[in-house]
Image (cartoon, rainbow, N blue to C red):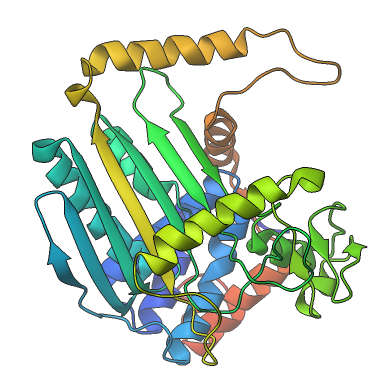
Length: 350
C-alpha cells in the first residue's frame, strides 16, 4: 500500500473533483475534508470516498455549483436547502451562519436538507469549538438506502446516524466526540473489503440475520448492527432520535426512495459558553477534567485513558509526519480516474 503525504493527497482529490465538474472552492472543501478524516484515522471517510462522490456527480446525484438557499429563518434558527450541492460546502456554510447567530443570541440552531454526504461530522462542531462555543451536530442519510438494522431486526431501516459534540478547552488536543450510532461506520466495511480483511463479530449480520465476519456479506443483503452489542437497543434508540432531528424535522421523511439518491439531513446547534460562564474559566476546567480522566490507573492490558478526541489528534500528528497509508484498491481507483481525466502525468499517477 502506498504512503502519501497529506498535501499531495489533497491535491489529487481536488484535481479529480474539479475534472468531474466541481468548482475550485467545492473541490478544495471536499478534498481537504476527506484528507483531514484520513489524518484523524477515520479512513472510512477519507480519500476512499472521492471516487464515490465522482460516481454520484456522473449520476446527477451531486450537482456541482448548486446554490444553497435559506428557506426560512429567525434570529436563532435557519432552514437551508442545499439543492443537491456538496455537503462539505453547504454544511460548513450552515454552521458558519449558526455560529454568527449564537454570537448575538447565545443559542442558535439550523437544519439542512437536500445535500450530498457531509463527510466526517466532527468538522462542523469543531468550527464552533474554535469560536469559543459548544457545537453539536447530528446527521442521517435521508431517504437513501439504509444500512443499520433496528435492534432485534435483520433488515436495514436506520442510517449510521452519527452524533458529534465539540467543546472549547485549553488542551493541546481538542476535546470532542464523533461517533456513529451503529456498531461501526458503513465506510469501514467498504475499507475492509478494499483491504481484503475480516471484520470483528458484532459489526454486521448477513441477509439471514446471522452474525458474520465477512465484510462482503454486507453488500449481499446484510446489515450493520446498532451500537451496544447485547445492549444494542441503546444505539438503536439514539439512531431513531437522530432520524427525528435530521429526517423528520428537516422534512426529508423516513424510509427509502426508489432513486437511492444519498441525501444527508443535518441538525446543528451552537451554545455560546460566555452566556453561561467566563470562557477562559470553562476552557481551563475542561482541561482539568480531561487530565483527571487520564490520571485513572489503567485496567489490565490497557495503554491508559484517552479523553474524547485525543486519539485522533495523536494519529493526526503521526500521519502529518509520516504520511497516510492508502489501500491498493483505493489507489488504483484514483489512478484510473486520473487516466480518465488525462491528469495522470500532472498528478504523477501514471
